[in-house]
Amino acid sequence: MKQIKDFKLAEKHDFGRSVVLRLRSEKPLPEILPGQFVQVRVDGSPSTYLRRPISIHNVDTQKNEIDLLVQQVGEGTRHLAAASVGDLINIVLPLGNGFSMPEKGEKVLLVGGGIGIAPLFYFAKVLNENSVQPVLLLGGKTKSDLLRLEEYRRLGETFVTTEDGSLGEKGFVTMHSVWKERTFDKIYVCGPKPMMKAVAKIATEKEIWCEVSLENLMACGLGACLCCVEDTTEGHVCVCKEGPVFNTRRLKW
Amino acid sequence: MVNTTIDLGRGLVLRNPVMTASGTFGYGEEYTDFVDLSQLGGIIVKGTTLHPREGNPYPRMAETPSGMLNCVGLQNKGVQYFIDTIYPRIRDFDTNVLLNLSGSTLEDYVKGAEMVNELEKIPAIELNVSCPNVKQGGMAFGVTTTGIAQVVSEVRKVYHKHLMVKLSPNVTNIAEIALAAETAGADSVSLINTLMGMAIDAEKRKPKLSVITGGLSGACVKPVALRMVWQVAKAVKIPVVGLGGISNATDAVEFMLAGASAIEIGTANFIDPAVSAKIARGIIEYCEHHGFQNVTDLIGALEC
Image (cartoon, rainbow over all chains, first blue to last red; front, side, top):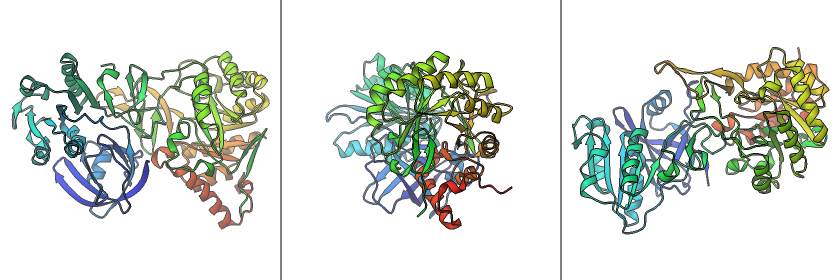
């Protein structure tokens, strides 16, 4: 069941342009699936009238905590990143469908680009809890884009690319040697659209099942306003409700 | 105890003056985790046309100061789909379920209204002659007195329940349009639909919306909406339903003081999905605080 609730900012970890907000609720959290997202209210600025859709980076059900990895890209995210520990932040959650869980024994690759690595953290954690060891392939423009890398490494074998070669293999995630050396049953992708399209193309060529997590401009986040549509084989569907995760076969890419 | 009942005429009786605006509340189902629908006077479901529409391409939304632009373009699966698939799911909601009906030709409006007239649990149509986001028809009917008179009188012939007509603010004299709707047989008018606007991305030198222009809604339109409700309420005898930027109970009360018999909550549903029921409670608190026994006492009670 979806809820609207106030969270207290319990901890804040700065990563330069990005920040991890650890948000604590007094009451138990609803069940949250990896790949689902929240709509965050940003108070105190007329230019941030609507809520901001942000993916769920991690969940601690024992402590009623969620982590959001927020990259400062505009007014709303700048305001959020400037919040102080102890501030109340109003959130609607959980929204959207989430990633499909793989079967035990399937070889799973998670591909993340830039801030798109955020939801893969929680997904990798839940996969571990379900005895699936994912391989992670994370890409950024430069070294500093790849946040919390050591923690990702704990959740699975992790490969890295950077466009400037400052860490891992130089180039895009699609150019990494892991594609030649390994085979996978399922690929899950979150990142910039051109990157997701490029990975989806590889998946299609190799005939591998592939899910991508899309990001579109949203108003309601509930499937009511029909603003965030994606063109699919079934016509326009809402990314907020029928997504954000889509099997690439459904998309007109 | 404050009596909150509002009788809009021809069988449309609301338990309180708060309804949710078309296109902002889906089919009600999307909001049941947040709002007990029995706390509302009514919900007006998504704009529906006789034939299915895919709507406009993405991007369909741009945030603006204290508001937003949209150019959804009436994406919907058509009246027959509504009747077969959605109506059975929502017909027993414990509130009035109104259908917002739109069209691009006179024939489409009439045929759609005929079909909806048969739905036992839909007590009213909100006739949308004011959508700014479709190329043909839609708003074209709503911006001239002859256009609105024509579509309202034709629909009136086939639709025998409450006929509410949603007015466009994109006109020079909205009172004149409202009067034409009344004369042609409307039971009430609701206003305002969105204001035509646009947004530009200066860095990319491109419009932010796929079809360049869109409809502006949200808190920023409230003063315009309030003024228009006040003008229309003075001009017509039928009830006026006010909407445009209502975000809290005080806003709602202001619309009623300006002459609205009921109100609709639109874009505010996106910001606080529970806001509609809060506003319904807030109106009662206002009445208690100011010693009004009946919510109807607020209608047009502006002192000026």
